[in-house]
Length: 218
View 1: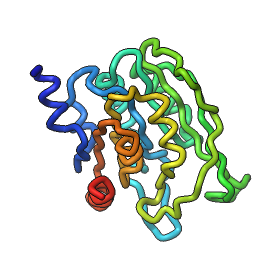
View 2: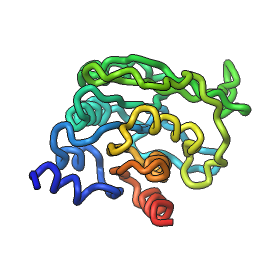
View 3: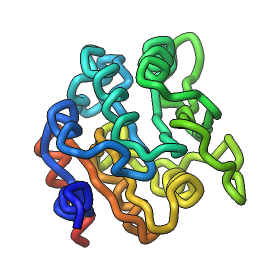
View 4: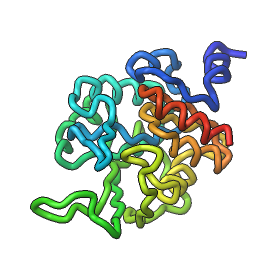
């Protein structure tokens, strides 16, 4: 067995309680097949009950994290990253500096407003990124996917499985491995497990890491 496969076997179907900037260098080049992640939006977000997201107050992690994601992703493969529109320029710069191409934009309309200021903010968004030249999916999905409210009981920015499952099914090979370096409560990893994919998650906050572990063990 190769060193690459040995390391991935140890880490496969695992969520690490770690800083992804320190953990991602443990992975070998081109060792995962799809990245699905919901990084901090860099908006100093605080939920109505006072919960926050680690590193949402700075962008020091942004370029290093996407550089590592690009390195560990297989050639000719996809990454889907949620992002916050107020910092869209910083995310775009990080993707392109890392070597990704933006090949699609996903919108997730909500039936409720997350907040209200100049507008009622009723959507989430994600970029579809490509490393190299991946094949077009056999059954492309639409770029507008309805959002189902989770109640954010497990994490202040919890994503519903209903929007993650089609992303994994479409962009990760049937025998592939899904990586999420900002796993939160583990929703992307649960989606991967549900669809029979291998997964590797990294989560900095010990509370959310423990929640994700419980969900994955259920």
